[in-house]
Length: 170
Length: 373
Image (cartoon, rainbow over all chains, first blue to last red; front, side, top):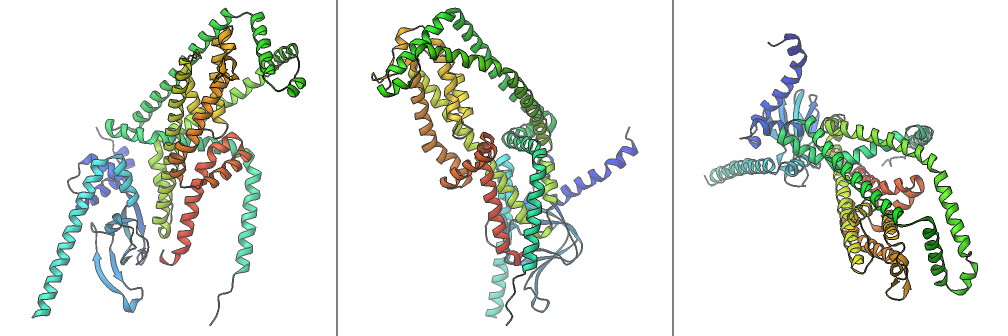
């Protein structure tokens, strides 16, 4: 029989654990992962909290990895001042950004700013390298899924380009 | 246009704070040095064993059991090695004592001294004590050694305590490593988070690749020493326990500069014990020219060759590259480490300099990119 007292004591732990895994399950980079693989991944994931208006990273800053939004919202912008700020995307729970930094040493190509108090999960190049060393199968799976995500984004960009070209021709 | 004025007050404040910090550290260091040393050793052992524990945990799904299994296997291996070395060594010593009585031993030493003296140039011969003096000095030396056994027992007790504490710290670190690491990472402010994470990763990488290089280097010394000793046996050196001697030489090699010489000692002892009383071994000449009673010079030469191969070919390739330090910096680090902490300082000098290099690189990086963080 379950004891309510013990459930209360451990409730926070279980909720936090399942929240992380639930968020990770929404991310296509980690699709088709087994529960065991999620628990392995969870050990490497970093939890970070940001206040409304905090920079998560700045444009041209060296990039180390990707972030997944667990709670709150984030905007991706170009331009540093309020009058020339160009918002590229508004992201919410379950969305992810910065994944290009997992592949290259290039600096960040935009700013990421919290638009509310936000809890993020961070997955970084070093974590991917550690995973690749410890569990190559899981590392390969992430790289393969990341390739799929980047392919989707490239297709999206291509179709936007084709649309823009055809509207120019009209 | 206003030129930014250097903030002298801030500079003076920083210098004063640094000086107070150094002064405070120098006061508390004698009290905490043992604990720091234990933690450093525990961290190094954890770095070595971590991947085995992680791999086992993935298989059996229990961290505690994985740590226990790895520790038991390790202790079993060390125990088996030490136990069988001691038993074979004592068997060897018993055979030696059965074979040789006190008079024969004194006579052999006297002959050895005579041969050694006759091999020296004339003017040095005149400066040498007579053979009887030499035997007397030897017995004096033995008496001194026996006298210092009591102080040795105290040192062994202290060593056992430190070893036990390092063992306990290692077990705790192995069990909680990922938790500790996460706590450390969580403590980094958001602004420096990615840089801090990279710094921790690079320090881990530097230490683990240094250790991997060192162990490969030690294994190569062990292998070459065994091969060399077996080769000497082909020429009649009559050496036993070659496998153990090789492993001891390999392990001793982990301590830079003095380690390789420590490795020679058991080989010379065994050569002496096995060959005492043998006229052929006493009359042995290295390359048929240089007198080398009991193959002692052959053994020294063999270890010198192994040391040269290891020092000039293997270590630069495996260890030097692993920490990315210039050989000159390695030598300076070894000298400073040796001056401050003796052999232990020499053991830690290279990885500590490697870690310092990683930290300085990241600090320089943060200073360059401060406006982007």
